[in-house]
Image 1 (spheres, helix red, strand yellow):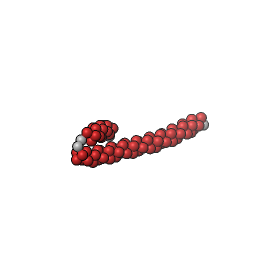
Image 2: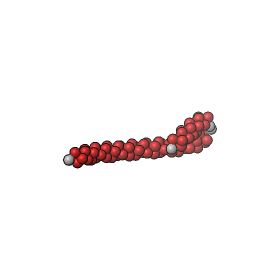
Image 3: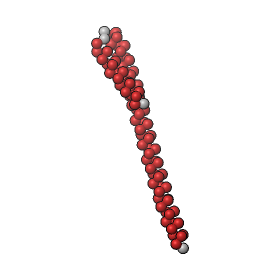
Image 4: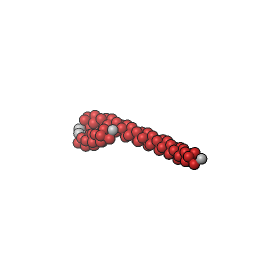
Length: 86
């Protein structure tokens, strides 16, 4: 995804440079292409942000589950020690 983002950014910059030096008809065509590339870039960036948010949510859920299991493990060890003392 990051590679696609970088490619789209480079393409947008190249098109922007071409637009500044092109005749009017070409400039209009290239502006349309530039707008499309910018839209694609924005979409790719939104996808990246969504994936990062999903990954962060998953990490938080896994850490919560790990914490819960560690607490359960601690309680079970305490119960086992208590049972062994009797």
